[in-house]
Amino acid sequence: MAALARPVEGRMIAGVCAALARRFGTSATTMRVIFLVSCLLPGPQFLLYLALWILLPSEKSPAATAW
Image (cartoon, rainbow, N blue to C red; front, side):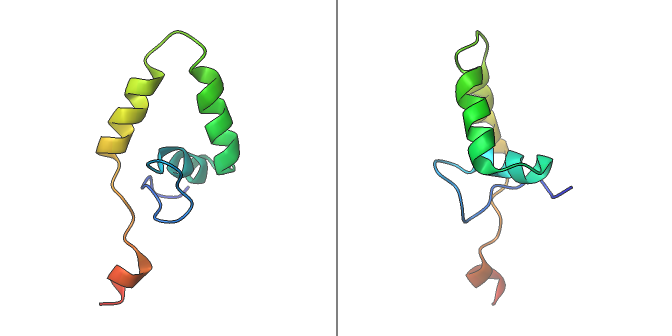
């Protein structure tokens, strides 16, 4: 499994769904649809998204690793 880090490319808002999709081997679109459907259910999904946005590190950009 891939490391859990928010990708530089392919993110829409913060890259949380893209990071989870990469981790679990699914497409980012599928993960985004799952998240949106889960928001229809009661629970702290949006707060969890914000927490992951803050806690997950961002991947290093390819340009930054060239130095």
